[in-house]
Length: 256
Image 1 (cartoon, helix red, strand yellow):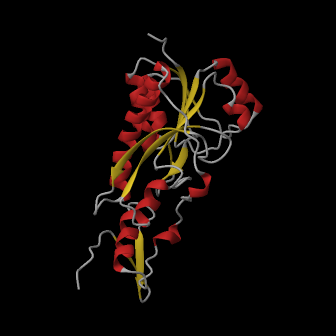
Image 2 (cartoon, helix red, strand yellow; image 1 turned 30 degrees about the vertical axis):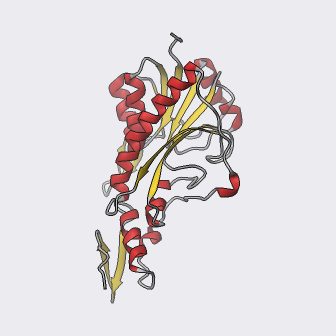
Image 3 (cartoon, helix red, strand yellow; image 1 turned 30 degrees about the horizontal axis):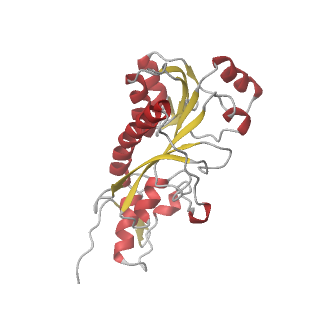
């Protein structure tokens, strides 16, 4: 049997927690967990830990929270750990090439789309907003581009007709964790193949803004319903009646 892989895990939101948990339950060694700094949150602006930090502390892992990963000090810190792999899941900062070059094997990302579709920060939401019937997760080797690296494994799933971004997020986070472990297994048994992306087929999923939740009533009913599902829970769908702002949480398309 191959020796356990030495891993530095990088992730921040709830989506990344199942992948960290899967690594914790595996035979591999997590050397450290890198996540974003604590941020003020909510109406009280209380300083709040990222979900990955909370999980990492429960597992007893060292936690690093660099404001920026592009510093020489952080690079030297990573080099001293001498990991085999970086595992990156919704971390929130772009890793420069000089950082990606540190792990002996490379850096693997777990992305919530069927690449090369929906590169970027909000693939789950945009797949629903655009009315896609299918999505999934892709593991890939990272390079200096945004979600442009060679694909490793892909798992597909249908998007439920009434499924919201929040519900799909939870399903894909668990699917991503399973796909990550399968990726590591195949990496170690020598059956993992790298598949270059067809960059001509790439689409992008930029981070959502509050204005993206505004309903355009001139659009077809099906697309409005998709928008409402895709922006739930954030930024939330809304419209105006005179000067009153109305939040829309759920909608159904009626047959005429």
